[in-house]
Length: 262
Image 1 (spheres, rainbow, N blue to C red):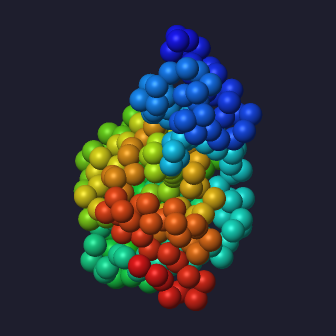
Image 2: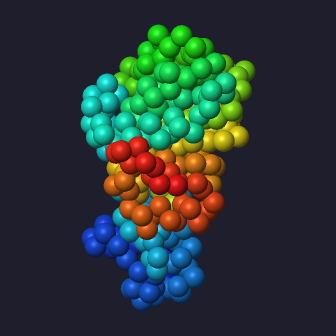
């Protein structure tokens, strides 16, 4: 029987070669039990090196390097605008809400501009600018170190400020989401701020377009079960979305005409 490290190396090599492998095939190749292979796959999935799938595993989809947020605002614009409108419909006048950084989250803010007696807390300069002229919205911006590409504020000053505020609902985006590996991010300095934001949430609304699913970043942020409501677009795989619903997550599919499916 090969040592665990060698088994892991051979498992990853097999999956890289074919993009997938079954438990049975790996068991026969390595001469170990199915139980051992399943345990190996779980360990490798937890490290973000592959993704578990029915009967085996598939290669982990890497998180692509993202262009700056201003550039992303014009990419998949109809999807992001529809997601923004659908997420904004979940917010009522008089509430307090936190909105995080990212292009999709900025569209949420855009669709809240006509609300009354709303308090918006944010660490995103793009969100603050969207709401700067909204007369009946109080905008609270956290301090922190600016991440130039995202126009967002992160770091210990931001984290400390976040612990001093409360919000009825939290709306954030995430670069990568996977049923098995949860919410992940490839920009390590942002992870602690992401976790601090999520700790605030009684109701966590995640806004992600179809390109973010099945991706695994290098840093774990939170399990998908932390999400209360998932808002995405009509191009997301319905079978995959059912997996989130089976975990008790409310799934809202935005529609170009604004007739969301829930």
